[in-house]
Length: 150
Image (tube, rainbow, N blue to C red; front, side, top):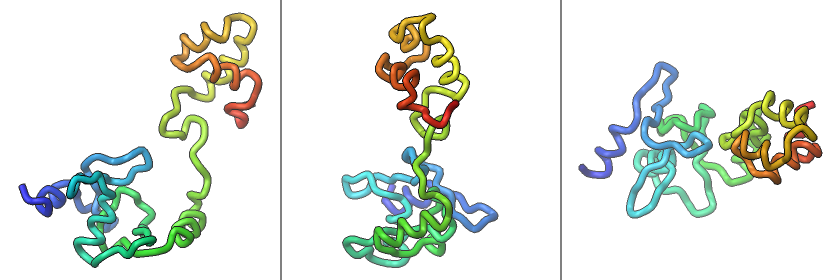
């Protein structure tokens, strides 16, 4: 199947006007598409295919603030500084922490339990029970990890 057809079958239009990527997405929600031997951002490919070349050093940003959107009408170019300003203006300036982090294995309740169980179980036993490292248990118990949990 030609690349353009492979790309077209990987998104669906939604009522909000976005073209939602239904193929693979990375941990940040951005669509990914294998093209010319590279795993590339689907929104960037959409921009290049429908609007034009993306000059070196520029980013493809989303008007709709939906990382899974590939609608070229929702995409625009900006510098990395523009991207950071856009992100901050839309309230996405902080990295995900705790349960919201894409790679989180623990809940807030798990962290509270790990702290309550200090001295009742070894850190190694707690690590095995929760599927994390002993070093992570230690950081939780001394408060250098999951600081936001009291």
